[in-house]
Image (cartoon, rainbow, N blue to C red):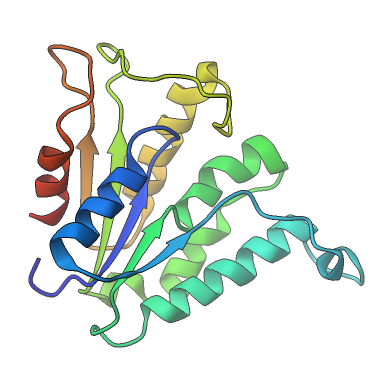
Length: 189
């Protein structure tokens, strides 16, 4: 992982993003960890004459801040548990607006020119997986997982970030999770 100091980990719920990020820190030491979750509905964005919905306005402000931080020098060590690409997936499904703008932000902040950023997409093999457990905390229902993952794959492919990896967390023979050490090795390779 020569020049990579910033790693964005994306994927549907319950695929081991937290486990991977802990493994990266165990291996490489301290990194600032940013975690993106469902955007709050803030009064300050609900007032006035905003061009977009309050949640969209909040999200864009948060992603602009993230991309500014990512643009700083390569000595900053940052891990993201979700980032801007999840907006492409979840905004149209759960917040009823388009998340297409995240690709414009990537171009605006010239993420294609940042050699110190790696994008990791964790995926599940739905044909063989037996590891998903619905804990009631996932954003979507179990029936939506495949559609959400398809949208994450589309977002991953459209992203201008150059250093990208798709990692399937499913052991295709047993249907269980692959060992976290294997997933970590693949993410850091």
